[in-house]
Amino acid sequence: MDFDSSEMQAYFNSLPQETRDFIDRSDVKVSTLGELMEIGEHFKKEDLPSPSAFGTHGPSD
Image (cartoon, rainbow, N blue to C red; front, top):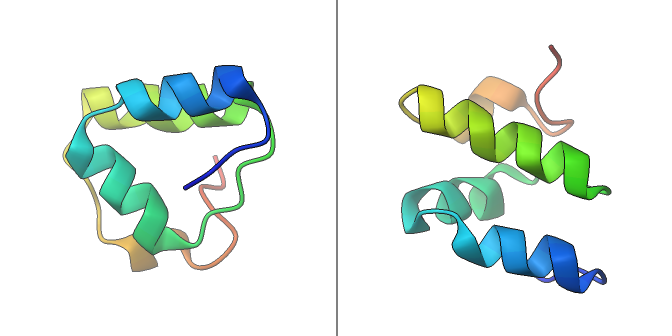
């Protein structure tokens, strides 16, 4: 996944490969660094769900 923001790209690149792969496969639309960090922190705490768990709109907590 490529981001316009260098901060977002750097954070995405710092995530574990499994998390990056999940985000790529899930079609989640991430528009802010905060959203990306929420996703990253969520996966640090839990096993990765299947991409269909979020549908096409991303997490809805």
